[in-house]
Image 1 (cartoon, rainbow, N blue to C red):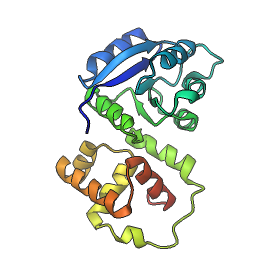
Image 2 (image 1 turned 60 degrees about the vertical axis):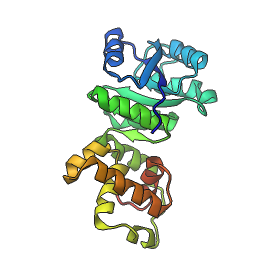
Image 3 (image 1 turned 60 degrees about the horizontal axis):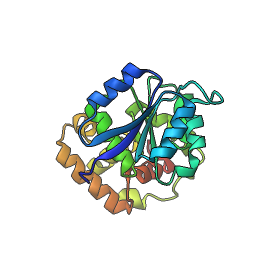
Image 4 (image 1 turned 45 degrees about the horizontal axis):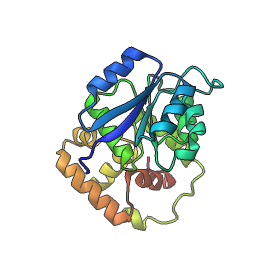
Length: 218
């Protein structure tokens, strides 16, 4: 993984929370701008073009659309800027609304500074990132209409352990969470994930989630 610093904009209407997030992020994530409402968020994203925007779901201003409105109004820079929702809300409607609007992931404010820093890096690299229990909302919303595979040839390429790892990763678990769940080392998880992606000819966790959802494996 690249060691370059990731420029990030932090959008939240609580100044003290923004200060806490900045203090908890590691040195690989640099907050280059902040905003506390919809209009200021849209302005700072267009001005700074950060790699990642940490975006609260419920924001004042604009037309009352909150984080989803910010995403819609920043659609013209979506090719260069990735959005990660960071919210106290774990309601399904909030999760689905911002993902439909273009966010690459959704984590709750209970997340640790270390895990949030890792989530920013994963989103910057193109992964989709979700707090574990929230991934199901996305799969329900976007996977319900997917066709079920007619055969299991691809799945048969995976060992039993690789299937366990695949399901947890596709649900949004971090490597550390998978390791804890399966009582294996993080390095072993990384090895299994690499094998799963290679065998399925996929390039990212986001593709893996879509692959698993299409087969109703989650």
